[in-house]
Image: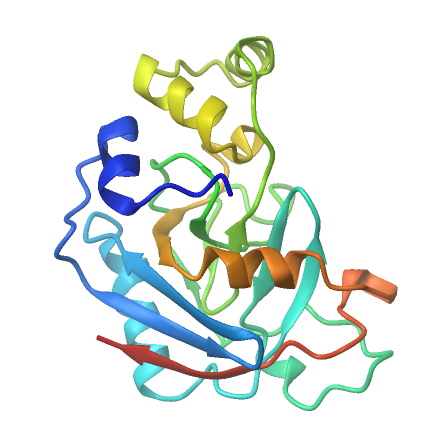
Length: 213
């Protein structure tokens, strides 16, 4: 198990996140996932809370699962969708301004979005999100990311990527607005689900409710 408790992850990454911030429980038919929502990403956090309180996510699926990468959910068109329906384009009818900053460590909660060629501002989907599973990194892999993306990781961020893993190739491209604080074992089980077309699990992984604490 690579996932570290929040207080240790906080120490490693040296982020300014408030450990007493808003938490949400994503209740699925495979178990519960508790996430901490970052106050620094105010637009994304407030939007997630709003949608949860409106029961927007109830009945939606984790519709895209890629081992060593992430599990994705939040498409309203996934509710009751037949097995052959392509998913991933639905939303509430709006986007959210980018609030890019935090790294894509193992357990990061981030917003999906359309590609740069149609979305150069890197605005986020109004509802779709993903949770990073990722892979353990090495100094060499992080050096390559720094060179390609012209970014610089501090020692604590490097230690976190090497200790718990993640997807640094996504850094500075997508908004991370929270992290898993419990239930990462559920995320890992979802990530290991057998998939068919479009990386969709053959057995539906359903969000039954999202409860704000």
